[in-house]
Amino acid sequence: MSDYIVTARKWRPLKFEDVIGQAHVTVTLRNALGNKRLAHAYLFSGPRGVGKTTTARLLAKAVNCRNAVEGNPDNECDICKEITEGRSFDVLEIDGASNRGVDEIRSLRESVKFPPVKGSFKTYIIDEVHMLTKEAFNALLKTLEEPPRHVLFIFATTEIHKVPATIISRCQRFEFRRLSTAEISGNLRSVAAAEGVQIDEEALLLVARKGDGSMRDAQSTFDQLVSLCGKNITHEQILNELRIVDLDVYFRVTDIVRRKEPKEGLELIDYIVRQGYDLKEFLSGLVEHIRNILVAKTTRSGVLIETSDSYRRRYEQEAAEFSVPDLLRMQRIVSTSESSLRWSTQPRFRVEADMVQLSTMDTAASAGELVQRIGEWKKKIQSEAPSSTLQSSSPGRESGDTMGAGNGSRGGVPQDPVHIPTSIPSRISEQDVRLKWDQFLAEVRHRRISLGSSLEGTRVLGIRGDTVRIGCADDFIVSSIRRNKQQLQEILRDVVKAGVSLEPEIAPDLAKLVKIDAPAGPASPSPERQHPVVEALIRELGAEPLE
Image 1 (spheres, rainbow, N blue to C red):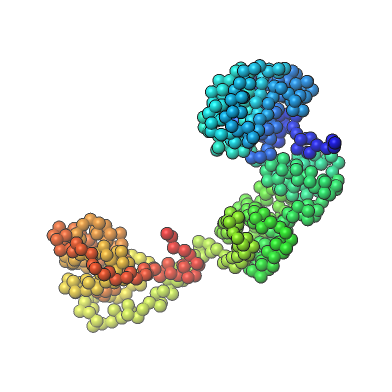
Image 2: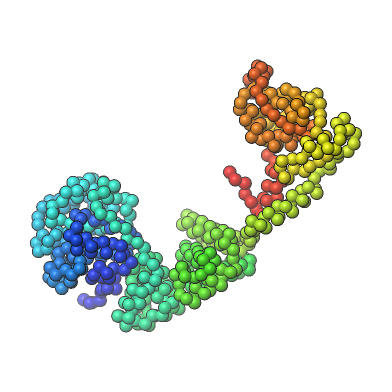
């Protein structure tokens, strides 16, 4: 039988300070031991492979060790050795996934009555405790709340949200954090030195990133590489054997996007597929790559990027080629594709479409550029205004044309900056407005059918100066007119060819004149016309209207 022991077991921490990246947990536990303020139940939660079970075993040894020093077990006494070798009668490790029923918990409740054989505490470590059934949790509640003085419970879980609140409230909870790439690579560097394995810095970072925050996963990958490559591991070997996409490929992607070369993008996707790379992992790496560029762009530094110094410098150079809005758009596109790739029947087609979209998208304009472009479109719209609008200034078209130009300027200046000012007269008779009221209502319905329908039953009460008083049956119609006052005034001015304004008011006797029955056959609504500036934004920048 082989004496080989995997790295995760062989180099498992033997002291609290050896647990990497969880000082907020280990320091607290050592202080509790030193001050004799030990709780009867602890709950360790966090990602896989970050030290939850290891810390639980260290705590079990520390509370029973005959010669503990500053809260740490000495790992030399018979009790420590028995716990380390997994043959202690006082430390019971239970797999919550395979012992999840109420019968197993009832057996546990009976066993807690018996005192420890050698140590001071009888410790129960239940791993993946969230796998227990609801009935099992209920059976555990009373014992967990008031266990015998010689019993210590330690629970570990990767899915804390599945643990009932009644259980959590009876424990001291510690949240273990995800490990950084630097912390994992540092541990692997020490292990490699102790094992006599030669591995370059780039290779260490690749293995650490492959672990995705889990020390155990990274150590398992390290064992696999040693078996595959022997005592000398290089960056190129890892890329070839583990099918990991090299960072240079991601830099090529952003170079293609910057140069807007969709053909090269499709050729790159073909290369990735032919090399056997996993497309989901490719997209995940691309999201991280874009994130790194964004970090370098916003911080003007590569300090926050988890990679080697040479690649940090490359990211700082790459950041100068993109704007923040463009990077955010790119990250949104790739992230959406990554999350939906699992449901796609043709993942390659989806990735190819994203590559084409990225390499053909327009550069986002800054706020200053948008203001300048809108100003240019405004001038263009004014210069292309319909001649019928300008003809209203011709003499002799309306009786009010004999009025002075000064009066015309008073009523014709619009509040909307895009409205085209004309020299139309501001005075018009009440009779003219009444004769053209139905035409005005029809034009409103043509542009906005819902608004036109709400104006049904309104009538002209009179004219005060250049203000048309509109009689309304209720407050709803009044508020509707006031909300859309600017647009309605512009429509009325176009119809009556005069500068007028609207003022709605309640007409108590009007409700009797409004027809209660709906018309039998309403006309089909015409599509609502967009404001010219909105149309320009949609046409020129590809803007989308808000829902």
